[in-house]
Length: 77
View (cartoon, rainbow, N blue to C red):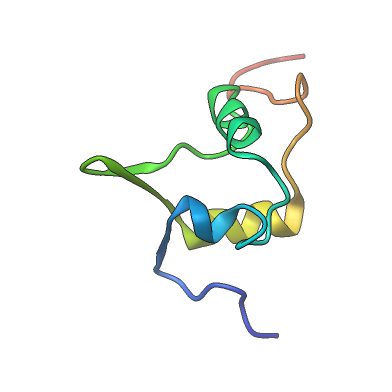
């Protein structure tokens, strides 16, 4: 099976979120998920932001963890 996005590649928000991309989220929902640690933070390219294609592929395959379920490394709950 061929990968949706070949690595290494950086993707802009318009390539990730619906309608142009595979994740059916709004910008505000996506940025909230970043703030909560459920989605990887972007790589800053000056004023622009981008995400690693491999990270986006993993989100597509595994889904975004639900709010309140994200755990930090070292949590023992």
